[in-house]
Length: 164
Length: 193
Image 1: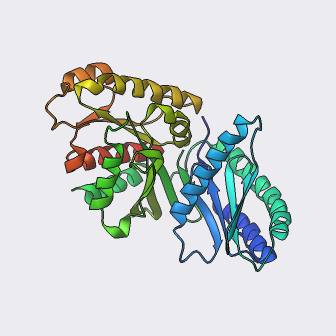
Image 2: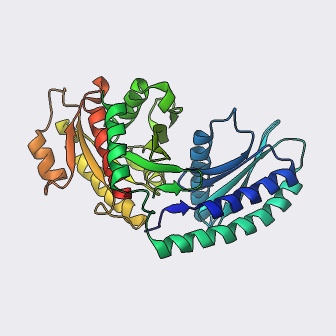
Image 3: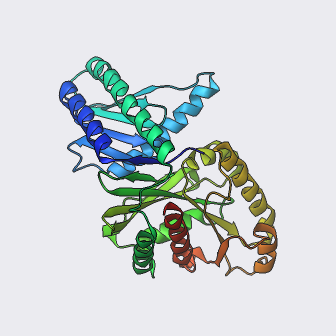
């Protein structure tokens, strides 16, 4: 079974730092990091007018479906995807087999620049995530903050919100 | 598996509604969407055919709010029930934290429930998971229809060792919907701790 992803402070800031540098280096509009199960890990750029949860889920679904297409034609994986729109474009790369990096950009930049810069960011993120996955394996399981007390409080909240 | 982000203080868990075609999975999620306060729910996304049959999945994010400093969120998914969409079902189970199996109580759909549960077991295996590791709640839906299998019989076949909690439901009227959701959410959070 694949472990969950537990991200701690230091790694989180390294990830954000790498993504911010990519945003500035490419003049992209928004960059999102999503796990392959469809959950948003973090984002950079102005996401105030974007439904990031839906975007994350659909990106993961897009990647999952495409990866099945790859296997049907004998490829292990398509490691990048590109969707071209009239104004906005989307460039998606796979990081460490388990994470999706989505770069949204318009005509202020070019696909070539995005592709080149993203490649080096992917390598940087892969290093960080390999470290995270190893840490999860070593520590196996969430920290003490997710304890019985957390469960009790969460149950009360569930009763309150869903008690209809 | 759940994503726990200690830096941005977020916990996201994935709950999948599984079961035979036309059993009421999408109806469950639509009822939840219609009743929840707008401040705690996201957009309901349905990747469906023109005839409103689920093609890939339905998706609804539900925000539980902040618990012990963690913004706790459930992502609810349904799978397409129709037999030939198995590739989609398998994909959606990736990273699942909890499953609601929506069984159709109608006598003529009895075999399809069994096939769908077998199919769930097979698809979990593809992700190296088993029902011992993933919380499961059963929902016996359509209890208002005249031609239905008794709960005892459904239990004998789908839950013979009584390992899983079950709820009777009429999802079109919302009966049993939130009871089922509450139970699976609690089991998922318990499994996290």
